[in-house]
Every structure is written in C-alpha cells, then in structure tokens.
Image 1 (cartoon, one colour):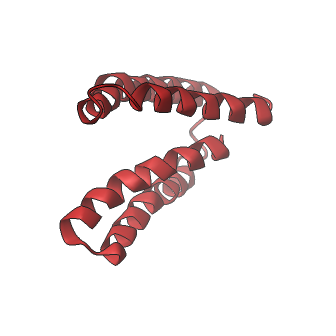
Image 2 (cartoon, rainbow, N blue to C red):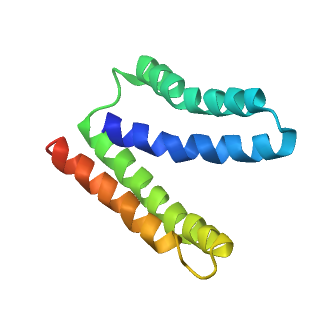
Amino acid sequence: MAFAIAIHNIPEGLAVAAPILKATNSKCKAFFWAFLSGMSEPLGGLLAWLVLKEIVGPVTFAILFGIIGGVMIHISFQKLLPTALKYDPENKYTAYSFFVGMAVMAASLVVFGY
C-alpha cells in the first residue's frame, strides 16, 4: 500500500510543481510547494492516527477506504481523463498512459502479494 501511495505522489507532485514552475519560472518555488503539498498527507495521517488511534477499528477503515476508493474513481474518470484528452485530443498518449498506470498498479499488487 505504501508503494502504491508513493507512486501516486509522483504525478501529484508534478501536477503541483508544473504550474508553479510555469508561472514563476522558479525551480525552487516549484520544488518547495510540491514538497509542502507532499508532506501534508503523511503529517495529516500521523496527526489523525494520534488523535483517533483508540477509536478507529477495522469496520471504520473498511468504510473509509471504500468511500475514498469511490472518490478516486470519480476524480479519475470524470476529471482527470477528460482533462488529459483536452490536451491530447487525438488520444495519442492518454489511453496508453492510462493503461500503463493501471499496469503499474496491478504489478505492485502482484509483487506485494495483495
């Protein structure tokens, strides 16, 4: 799971850094904001665990992971893919990239013995 989250953070960091780099032309600012954005997840997770470790159980995790999975699928299909196709109207790269991403995630599940 940690590997999948780490892989997901790479395009997320690029999505944060690219517009900042383009707007400011500063690699330092782009790196800083991408780093800050990336640190919000582990710090937020640690804080939530410290506050909720006695309350949260397996059923709560199952419900939360199900909800989060639904949100991620919605964002992927309704927001990310249409935006990718906007920048790649002939679909030369988007579909292939989509399937490469799926293959990377499937391979990580196999390698780590889902």
